[in-house]
Structures are given as C-alpha cells and as structure tokens.
Length: 167
Image (cartoon, rainbow, N blue to C red; front, side):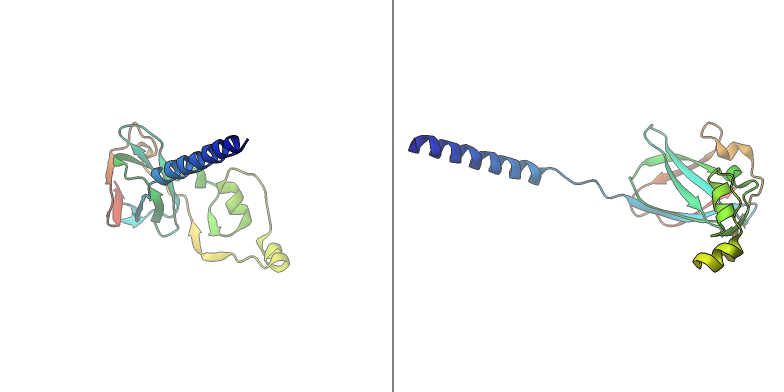
C-alpha cells in the first residue's frame, strides 16, 4: 500500500513538472507593430472612413478608422510585410456629422435611427463635438477594392507614420 501511494505521488509530480515545462515553452501572442499616418485626397485630409491592409500573401486583413482629420492608428498589427491598402468612406454617405452624435454614429454603423442629440445631452450628459465632423467626400472607386487599388505599404517593425495619398 505504501508503494502504491509513492507511485501515485510520483506520477502526480511528473505530471505537474511536465505541464509546467510545456507552459514555459509556449510563447504568448506575438506583439504587433503600430501603424499610424494620414490619408489625403488631392492634398487634403480624408475626413473619415476606413483604411484596410490586405496582406499580398493572403491572410486576414486589418482595418483602422480614419478620423475627421484624416489620421488613422492601428495597434498590435502583425508585421505583415507587403500589403495592398484600400480606403473606403462610402458608409458615411448620408451619415455625416459630428463625432458623438448618436444619429450619425448609428447611420455610420448601418442602423436607421433618429435621436435628438440635444435631448440626449440634457438627459445623459453626452458630449457632441461639432468641430470634429466626419464627412463623406467622393473618392475614386478604385481605392475601395483590393483588386483595383494601387496603394501598397510594407508593414514591419519600426514603421514611421506615413501619408497615404489618393490621387
């Protein structure tokens, strides 16, 4: 009986050591790179939209929101190497307005609701910043599709902020 207890204890100990050693060998998710910059069209900032990075070698695409001033920022994106860049703001058509306006935010997400922002501000103290409005501007259609966009970027560690110029 004493030998049986010793065998069981030894087996448990070996299992624990094995589990800890395997856990120590596995790596966590790889840290990605930060990508930031500005999107312009005819020398002026694109005032809202989405910029998407499609790896040329396949794999998942990564998207960042373009802010009212044309800037974008994406964190922890894998160093994808060469990517095709697409820019789309068509979802803003009819959803223009200040950031924080609940009606604008809903339209930008494809929802069809109408909220009076003044009533919401009074009731829930929601801030609507009228100085920072996203706006639809017509962009050349080729930039919205991976198959037709001629924009490229090499995403790697240490990328400096860049300007993506649409022509």
